[in-house]
Length: 112
Length: 114
Image 1 (cartoon, rainbow over the protein chains, first blue to last red):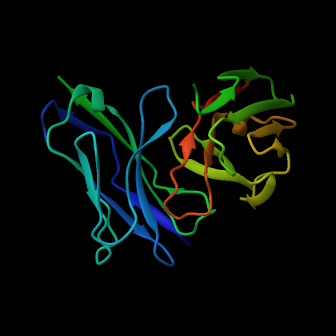
Image 2 (cartoon, helix red, strand yellow; image 1 turned 60 degrees about the horizontal axis):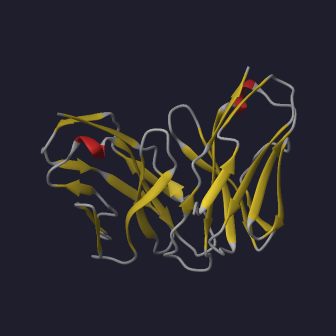
């Protein structure tokens, strides 16, 4: 079945460090890919998405590129801030009315 | 205005009780979902409704019964609560029909079964 694999956390970084959170997927068909973020005590918010190969999603300094050849959608940010501390979820969807399939989430802690 | 709202935010109850969680969206979306997030933060789909019709039921025990009185509401009723039902339950909605649709999530309901 369809699945998403994320790197295990937690990830702890100092402020202004470079962030990469790896995400790979297995899917039948041609999925859309998403990164969601969950701040402490809140629901999930869409961070960025990409819908076809080589598309780059970006938002709030975060970027991820849809790589069909490696079935990957790694999340990157050049300089993290304390306010980026959250749990990040990679997800996919393979058809229009279907729910998202989530990875297990990666907790990021950024220390000043 | 809150796009997807859930009530209550916290729910503490005894084993064996019956409880409901309500969800409402004011986005005019056609599709609504319930997800369960366990203590390790893993998110899994439970149900999906499109225009008040159930389209996905992911092998959830029949103690869980979703009800959609109209397109804007999807409530979750749980009978005979068990310890393992303790989790955070998220409602979400999307326009539906498109692969690229964004799902909008509610703030979650933290259910604790004692």
